[in-house]
Length: 382
Image 1 (cartoon, rainbow, N blue to C red):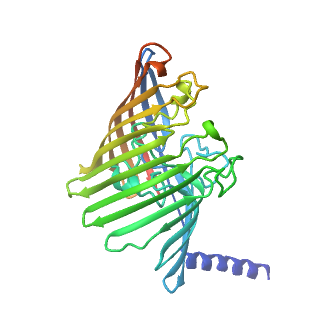
Image 2: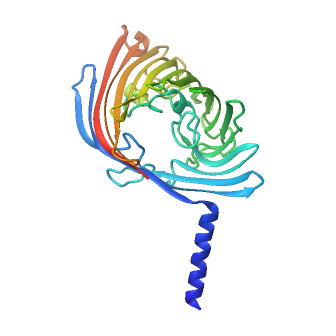
Image 3: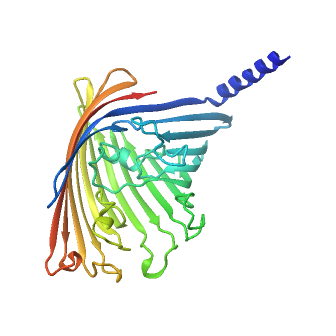
């Protein structure tokens, strides 16, 4: 009797798996990276480290879908990133940090709920902006220069069916991080996100235009409340056969992070509520070479931070201008359908120009930060 019940239970599990078309997927990527950094007036820092996710993101997940009939389908996607060099979770206290969504699909399009990457996050199912406009789909490790989104909780995404090559995707997060105590989900007190993107495909041409906004919560009020961030993207790619050419332009207003300068506020003892206003450009290509793929990219960004609104700051009524130049390349050689060897190198330079008021003295000041990388590793996708 017990054996019959066990076989019946196993049979039910297999039958459900077949009906739901459930699969396990993931990737393991580990390699060595030599990094170089040099700030004006300081000694250079060099390091050789083992790193994860330099070519493919080390992750594992479960996905499935079930046909409901009448053109309707329900699907789910659960994915977690981990560090393959240490085995640790990429995000503390989150099991499925890259994506945790459930989707209803039909003739109306697709409607998804859960934790997802934004249109500009270069991550997950709705990776739209950078997969179309950036040859590296979000930069090459330390070399990027443009402003990108992130993965957020409490997201709802709607994607229209494709019509004559056009498709529109919209997103809204009721609260970007559920673990953050401050702010009420769905209220102005919480950090929220909204974005919309339109893509057009015609033969070998793909284009994207997108806008997204970070709505910082009103946990802090008055002069202490940070202004919302606005981003506009325009990009595309064209496959010439011998190579695939990518181009991207970006405009940002009120950005907390710009050109990889997320720590500039700490470095310069700033408490700005204005954020960076600026723009960025990217040109890149992917071409088949000797049985593998060779990717090349250049990035440029130019932005300004006006810090004159915070009277408590050490630096008042002044400006900080940042320019970033970067060039990088990577070659990936497939050992099989799932395994690949890769190697890459890149160089970037940031230049900080500060007005006299911003520099806290009678004269303006400038500073350069140089970064370099050389790396190689092995990827396996399953």
